Amino acid sequence: MRPSVKFGLLCAGTIGLVLAAASAGAADLAANRARYGVSLSSAKPDSGVVAVEGNMTVETGEACDGWTTEQRNKFTVHYTEDNPDLVLSATFVSWESKDGLRFRFSQRELKNGELDKEVSGEAQLTGKGQGGSVTFTKPSASTLDLPAGALFPTAHTGLLIERAAAGEGFLAAKVFDGTNDDNANDVTAVIGAPLNAEATATATSKVKSPLLQRPSWRVHLAFFPADITVDKPDFELTMRLLDNGISGDTVLDYGDFAIKAKLDEIESLPKPAC
View: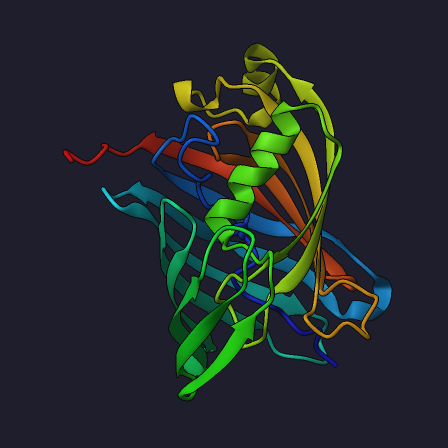
């Protein structure tokens, strides 16, 4: 039996999440385009997974009114002889206002070249710390209410950096990231000790860039489903998060197996002429 694979895990807060930029004012944000090589980090014997290979590109751009994120993933999961390989690809595009109150999102997932899932829509909060609503156009027209205190991915990353810079070691938040049509996920973060800019440049990757010469923290995040009766996270993510919103090498643990996203290239993107 194949393990399930959830997309959108390295964007917006992610995604991802986590790979999205921080909110304005919370960090010295860097618009950038980063490319990561994807490989298998570990696998349980009964997972059936023997190798993973692929790549991921994450582009975080700044607009006059918000931050944009575009992430493209494509990788192949190799199984034991009993199962054929699985080619997975996904595209995630989002825009989030700089005040963290509005969010537009679109995600498309393919399995072996065939459409598997689409999610798109827009969300808004009535104010900071307040609830809001989501209007989906895909997979079907629907709406849901967001709970008080919900955050969108960019605002969550900004708060995470803010708490880390203040020396705090834990953050729990409800985050809506637009990668599925469920409500906000509970996301817990454990923040490690800081590294200075020189140590970060050494620890982050072999890639040389001024963008990586920043203070950073090792961060471990657990993403729990919106269903409060479930006490096991959907997945866990460990990364080095820089204070400009950039993520270095990242490990995503799905339980049965884990994949590593290794930073291979990074370049800065221009700021808008507002």
